[in-house]
Image (tube, rainbow, N blue to C red; front, top):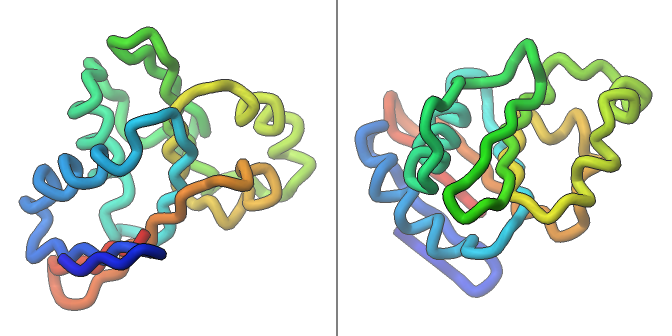
Length: 143
C-alpha cells in the first residue's frame, strides 16, 4: 500500500484481500460521507461496497441496487446508509426526479456506483475512489 497526504493507493493482490482494505478504508471515513466508486464494469465496486456495509453492521444486504437505483439501510448507530447505483440514470432531469438533490442533504453515509452519471448532484466533499484492474484479479484502488 502506498499513501500520500493528498491520496492513497491500495493494491488488492486478489479479491480476497477486500476485507483488509475495507478495515483500512473505514478508518479513513469515520464520519458520514459520500463515497463515489468509479471503475469499469466488473471491477469490484459492488463487492467492496457490500463488504463495507457488512463491516459497518448492516444485515440483510440486498446487493447492487441496479434496478431500484437506491437501497437504504439503517446502521446500528441509528444513522442511515445509502447504496446507489446510477448506471441506469439517463440524465440530470431523471436524477432530480428521483430526489437525489434532497437525498444528499441528509447526514448519512452514501456509497455511489457509477457516480459520473450524477456528478452534478454529489456533495462537494465527496470522496472519490477509483478501482482499476492492473492484472487478472489484481486491483489498484486510489482515493
